[in-house]
Image (cartoon, rainbow, N blue to C red; front, side, top):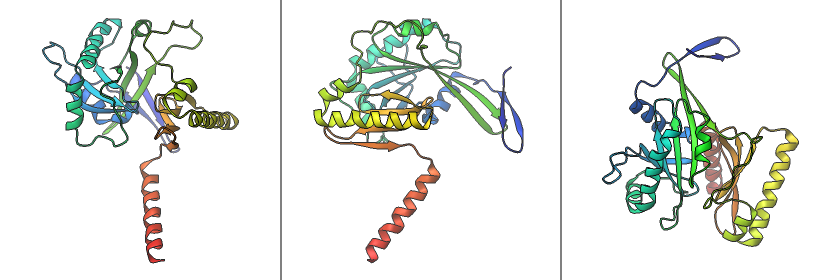
Length: 277
């Protein structure tokens, strides 16, 4: 059994591996910890997909407006899962009204999410404690964006620690031929979708941020997306630049809850000051 050691300035604790008891528990913990998927808003668990015998575990929408089919397995996963998730992806493409109804029924959907129900792409997310690396060879051959994510759990009394690992091809390996239908998000894409002059300025700021990152030696990776460019610390976005109109874009930053409360208090005091003066 694997151990995870948590070291502080005072002590070193040994955390025991704590596998998920059931697939339902695994699914519930992931659904209740949406930060694991970072850029995906999860709409609903256990979606009944028409007359199909199988059902997607979770349906969500990411911040590029893609419909996300999330399939979870509490066992080791290999390429045999691909036909199953393809079936779910085809269902999502052919039943946009069903997903739209789930979206409209959702009470806490983020205001910044924008979905084009007549023109969306399907993204597949497979989550399991262990995924064989050979599965990558299969997902790179299909006409869908696929994320393979491993989630393992360790425990220390009442505390739980989740280790999240996204499987990706090593860059030193031979390039895989691009699959027809997958979009490359770059300057040419932004120039086509947004104002040309704004796209030029957008890329200019991206390049300046990359220079700043390199100059300071920050371990961040640039990731181009449909509506934004993010600078990632491992699996998560640290900050980025996002389009908020055809001509306008803005920086966004991920900050902690403590800092958010501090900023809100400062803004509240400033508003009161302006009201008095």
